Length: 284
Ligand code: C2E
Ligand code: MG
Ligand code: MG
Ligand code: MG
Image: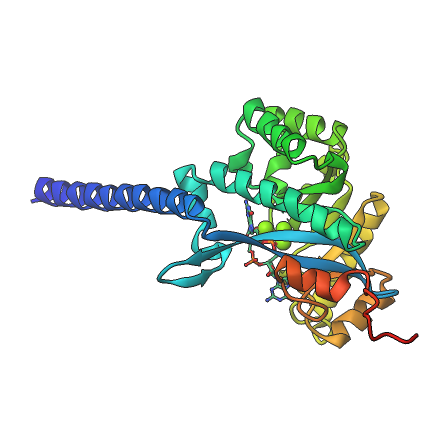
């Protein structure tokens, strides 16, 4: 009976794995197909300097306008893209689109780097990195226009190869930001060994601020730690004026959150933050 049970379990297990594999294969195909059919797009969310309301930088966020399921957010496809390998093509698309949109931003008088998200799955070898440089060159977008957002897992000591790739990227003029800071392994020590320009403190640390003293203490500790290391800070997920006021008191002025702006199309971004054009009717 024990043997039967064992076999049943393993068959069940294999069935589950097979289903998962089939599903991944399907999704891999669907994502590549979607890229072919131009169903993917990039939205942009500004990082605002709360001192004067000016735009500091812009984060590129992938979206999938699915033919039957509607507009899909990254939680519906990024992790599948990572597991299936389609993240490679998706990453190329996002970087290409951002490089093109950069020209529109410059034409509208909008400066500031575009932040591109990269998961550790995308840093597999030098060929991947060379491909990114080839895209920027092809699109005539200088590396100095970009910051790459990576996560703390990339800073682990056993990631020697990734460390080399990060140094190469940094040397080319791209700045590096640690995204979702505070949610991964505490890497305060490793931060010293990497050319990191900025930390983005995860939204989880803003929730409850300023009513929860524990959260207030944590958030302000993270801000001060970054500062002690000489690294700029962006606080993500800021939704209320009282959160903005709290951050102002900490002199943490770089803010990304729904309070200032949600992710939007390039056209909307230009409309809101571009140089205001004088209209024919203007008499001033
Ligand atoms: P992230 O890089 O931490 O991006 C910030 C996320 O927080 C975005 O979600 C944004 O819409 C959301 N957000 C910003 N402000 C607020 C706020 O005030 N309140 C709330 N509730 N949310 C806020 P989104 O666009 O759904 O992206 C989720 C994640 O997907 C990103 O988190 C990033 O890790 C990943 N992602 C997005 N685009 C790409 C991509 O092109 N490549 C890779 N590898 N990952 C991507
Ligand atoms: Mg990000
Ligand atoms: Mg984040
Ligand atoms: Mg993230």
